[in-house]
Image 1: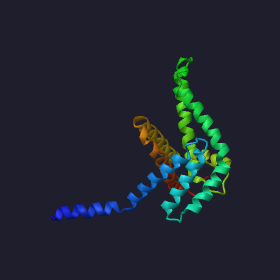
Image 2: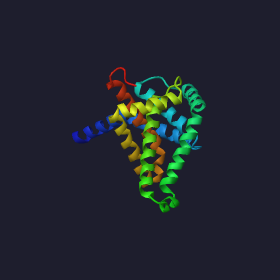
Image 3: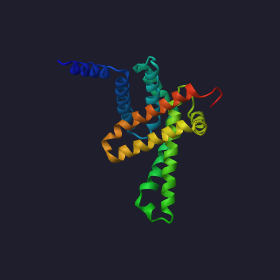
Image 4: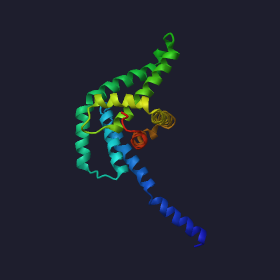
Length: 206
């Protein structure tokens, strides 16, 4: 084997065993089970919060096992089911306003559809930030209130999540099978923004 081939082999081995690849695999795995848990739609919010909590522990190197996931999942479902139902209703209503053929016939449909898109993306950013902050000690009402404040005070993080939501939508639209990886990628983006906020933000911020 030539020295160049040897170097390439060592580099490939390093890449395959790197922490980044492990994180990527964890994101994909999380995405799959979050997608499965969210199939009933009304469980989407608790499933995403559970995925964010899991990825957060993985990134911080904290212990995470099936028992912890089960406790988190049951608590997220118990406290977040009503909010999840409300968000699904709003999301479905917004989607109908954007995609329904009847909406195109209504007067002023163009601006209304644009407003619906902006509203849906804004709600998605707020929900992602709330899921990234979620713990079993929090209520969803307080989480969503804090998330709205945080979206306004941390414009950089909110912009990054906005781009993540738009990119996820484009990916899912262009190649529908990739929609199964969207939950994990959005959860990872939310957790990364939240960790960055906690590390860089001054004390006293919401």
